[in-house]
Amino acid sequence: MKQPQTGPVPAPAERPLLTVDVTILTLRDDSLQALLVRRAEPPHAGRWALPGGFIRPDDISLEGAARRVLLDKAGIETPYLEQLGSYGDAKRDPRGWSATVAYVALIASDRLEPRHGRNADAASWWPIVGTSVAPTLAFDHARILAAAIGRVRAKVEYTTLPVHLLPAKFTLPDLQRVYEQLLDRKLDKSAFRKRIAEVDFLEPVEGERRAASNRPAQLWRVKPDHRTVFFDRTI
Image (cartoon, rainbow, N blue to C red; front, top):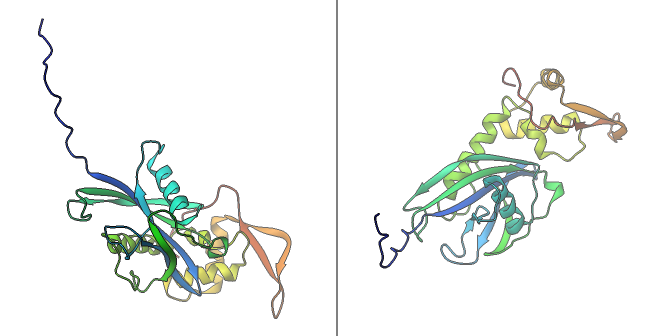
């Protein structure tokens, strides 16, 4: 019978850093904006970044880690969170080989006021210009942000995704305006409403209308379990 080897146990190999980073998008002041936090600690202290953090052993899943980071770093709970992709190499973080799983979140701006959490000394909304923001971002977050914006704009063409940027009750003109802001083009009112009616994901809020100059506008809300619906053709 072979005897077990004795002697010192080799030290485990250095493990890559594993994180989650989240692009949080909303519509404010008639523009698409991203939430950024300013890093208070090295590396990249003083630079703006996407909210993110290390994955912990008690996180039950990648999405669970992303939701925890959102709450810890920005005080946000979002109804819509989608995995964007993974990014990793030996150069993206000066502390060593690292990989991150990136997510994109959409939220109505009237439902939150961002706060900063651990490892950050400020949190602020920044307007999107093209696929970027004014400050130079830490790590490779500019690349992640651009990918998130591209994903959202592409899905606007064939899904009801923009509804996540609206409050719980809204008018059809509100919904069309969100589509137009994300697509950066005007939509025909009749064609837009026909497309929205075809996918049947909205219901009127009975007895509730918004005052307007000509006649009160009907308020609508998303039907239960109909948060994101796919069109059979682009809008």
